[in-house]
Image (cartoon, rainbow, N blue to C red; front, side, top):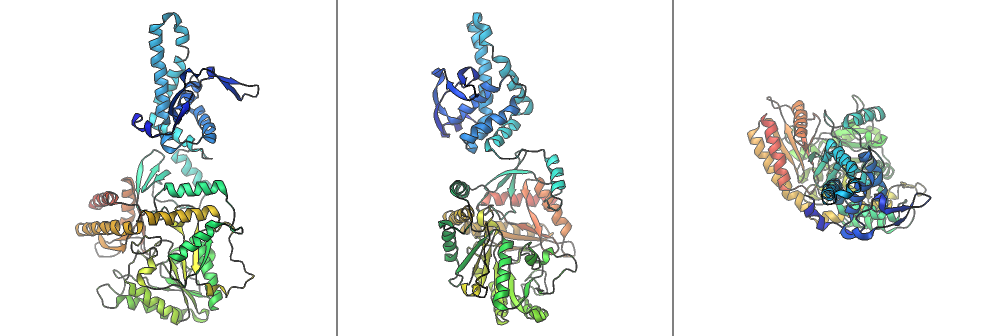
Length: 574
């Protein structure tokens, strides 16, 4: 496992015997010199650290604990790559075992010098015994964590859960037994015990967890400059230009902020100023944010009886369960006609804006035909309202047809909101509007956010757009999403609990039903828990919580889809 990886690691000339006997210290306890260059060699850089750990710390009762401090000091000057860090424990172990073996050989060969030859052997053996007692895998995880130089310490899952409940009492967690995640790679997430989970839920890491191109862009920009957008800088300008190039020409003004909630909040301010009205229409179970203004636009989050007077709802275009079914001619247009009644219900508020998630994710991942968006947008504009396309969940290529999900319908919104996946985990969002709408906002009112558009965030967002294009991830979403959807339909033929399979690209919903055909929320919860036990992360959505939400990173491949389908088949069969 170790030897085949060594030729691919960074290499340099190293001392090879950086023990306490070969280091000179000054009065300030800093290294002032090194002696005994007879062991110098050209080898992988990480071997230098492995030798130092083994030779300096053996004989200490707390050798493993002390290693953390030694590693952190080393990587503060010379950071290790993740592959190097992953091999460190094995290399330390090999060094210790080598010292024990050579000692035995020397004692046999030079019995008169046995005392000197064996001087380091007890310490090396004790260090090796300590590693064996803890387990090489656990030691490897510990050393790798220390190599990352993060400003927090790994906690036991049970302790961490209790600390979180005390410190963050209103911070929700998934699953009955929460997953303690420590790292991610591509479509995989890894817990504190290094068990991997297939991520079929997160749309935040849209190009895959820890994508090296995005991580590199963030790291390099952070090292150069991290400040706000009141200074002239290329990154925010290039990002704005890049976003505009992906949208209809009328959407020509970009504002970069920190989150989808903030972008939707800003859209609401502009809509009220531009129309002189104060009423909004949203779908019946939509989610558009957590600020005070966007909470009012998010029925999914309302407490019982909370509906604000300035917000009216229309039913989500559910062609499976709603009053108008997919098999009926004109069903989508009939759903759109509800907008007129909702606008009338706003009374004196008047219609300022219609907010739409084009994938209706919180409403149950609905996928109406393009005619629905065209008709509902037409009716909103006829009433003097603006159309806001909330692409936070469905955008960045997830639909598999275009970069932005509204584009398949041919509509041209007045504003487009982008968020969650925009920075692949780095906080960044944007609102793109018709510049004419901004004229209604008084010039002395600054539309500015301190961290919005900072160079690091913009570097992340630019890298994400580049990866989506370079790796053909929109096409991949269509191809793999289509394959997965066909597989889910096959499962529906075997399992009556599946009532409907819907969605586009890599945003799919599986509606679970009971024997009477009603929504089955409890089975949906049971399925997500059972899938988690099998190493696959899903969630549920929809008004009744009975729709499995499948929303993996866009680097998802057919073999990952097969893992999901196989596990889901097994869970539903049980």
